[in-house]
Amino acid sequence: MAALATAATVVALLSRSPVAQIATASQDGQASLDDVLERAGAYVTSYERDFAGVVAEESYVQDASSGNRFDASGHLARVGVKHRELKSDLLLVRPDGSDRWLQFRDVYEVDGRAVRDRSDRLARLFLQPSSSTSKQVSKIMDESARYNIGTIVRNVNVPMLALWVLMPENQYRFVYNHVEAPDASTAGAWKVAYREMASGTMIRGVAHQDIPVEGFFWIEPSSGRVLRSHLVAQNRTVRAWIDVTYAMDAKLGLLAPEQMTESYGQTADSATVDGQATYSNFRRFQVKVDEKIAPIK
Image (cartoon, rainbow, N blue to C red; front, top):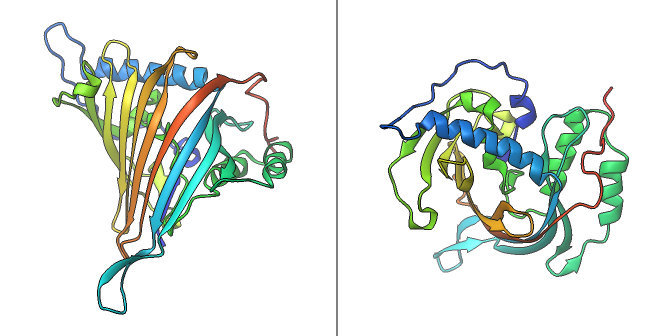
């Protein structure tokens, strides 16, 4: 069984060292890649802070297969096919003692049925928290992945995950390049490729082995705003990609996640999971969002 899990809490403890150099491509009077990355870093830092007071409705469909098998007639067929539909609220929460916000998926409907123990689980998670930040972070991430289907275990299926790559304190871990590939849907944006070079990667597999990520961002060069992200994580046992598009929400006055499309594949048995989520009804909390969640001992 393959596993994909974020390891942001581990990465945050690593010392800042010049593991990778950022490629720069300046042209006469135009923004250089360094300029664009600096603006993007400032943007995602501000974006995380602004989005912390926002909750969105998520409509999420997953389809999974446990792999290929030969049937009684000797034909290769997909087996263990499952389908799931989730309705959730998606929001950012911050455990006490942590300087990072985490995306939390509060699932309230599974395959058309209301989640019965939702109130009790939320009370245990936030009103009766763990005694340490790391345990609380793990609980929040596991709860967000509680209703995933398929044999590929994962907690990376949240739309804003890739923005971690652009945080100023994380950029030293990656190499970046400006890719000359115009896209009509993101006219005027720079397509920026990235590849993780440092050990202790942001996504880990079974037994915490490194799974480096790579992909692309579509970034407005003048503002640093991210219009789209594409993230790929793979090793010899599993491959995953997550693509997210952003659109302006008039009520918020912010670019908000519009759609997340994802695909996971397992090498050993060809197991797969495919998903698509859409986001709507963005609204701001009516309560303070940075309440302390877990006391630190």
